[in-house]
Image 1: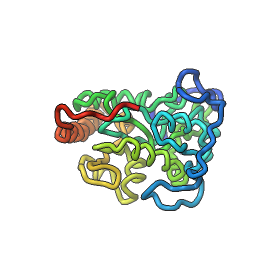
Image 2: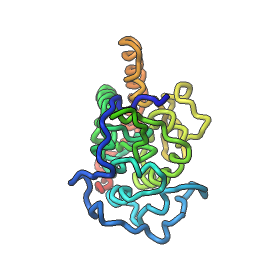
Image 3: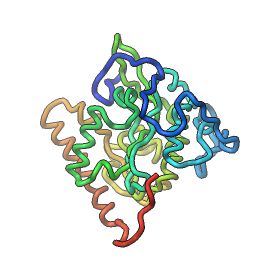
Image 4: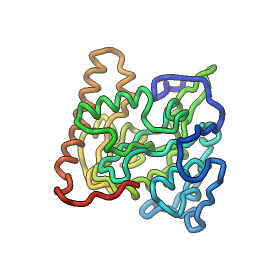
Length: 270
């Protein structure tokens, strides 16, 4: 049986691959972007060779976030693009010191082209506020850029992405991390955590612990905010939210501890 949408609601399916005007800057969405020849089938440093479907041929020569955001709209690295409205790329300042990675876009994200704007996004916004973190200061993205869903009447039910789809989309995530170079990298939920930290990572066992990883000086895994929406009663929901905020306060403390010295020049926004 399919799980409920991680964004907590179901809607009628929008027109296939309909891009809303004004969502993306740069090339028009009907103007194909030719991947750089040297980018074709080339894994990013440290990623190793990959067999099977991959987004690697669709990565542009420039690895700036705006250019990659536009290029991602033309990605056909796996089959998910066929039924998604659009790719949902990451969002946030190019000099963000914290990066949060979820599983995949939800229904509302798929429609509007922005990450974490549905019910789970509202939970995340509240948790960030309670932890003393400004959402506008962090970079939000997902391990998979297209919404995977199954039909239930007029509803679109969230379907967990498979290993092939996660691996296919990994070049986008790696390129975002390499472009951003965050101080703190946070994986939200098991899909993101195991994609970044390995299959042995267990969110409920390992959450809330900062450690050094190949991706960032400090990394951490915690729950996906959608798990709080699935709490069965008020007391459980309140505890789950408190635990989530506690984890994010560790991120806030690390960001404060490693804040650049006064007078240093921050990286310019992309």
